[in-house]
Length: 155
Image (cartoon, rainbow, N blue to C red; front, side, top):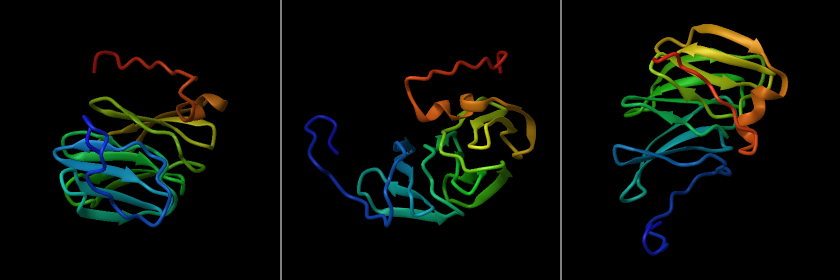
């Protein structure tokens, strides 16, 4: 969509509903879909760069760094993939599906799961640094009226 006029510039065909917000990085638009795929499309043309299939719906808006994407999945895993190829870098399992979107510091991926735990994962390996049972706090990212503040201790 043209940001100035609102006119449609291109359209990308996917086979499932898209509930994620688009993330634009380095001329590429990234988004997940209910068809269990994470998509990368060219921001200028809408042409598909890659689409990678995972084990469940992707309602989690991906978080993009310079080279990686992080997101939660309906199959209960948090994934990190290479931004250029979509190649899996790591997967971390939680006890239930994940629709919330991650927050990422330099070293840590923070995300809530439908198992009612909040996870801190190593951003490079996916290893669990800690998790805490938080009840509905873990699901707060699904509702923008429920803010969550986190401190990253300067990192």
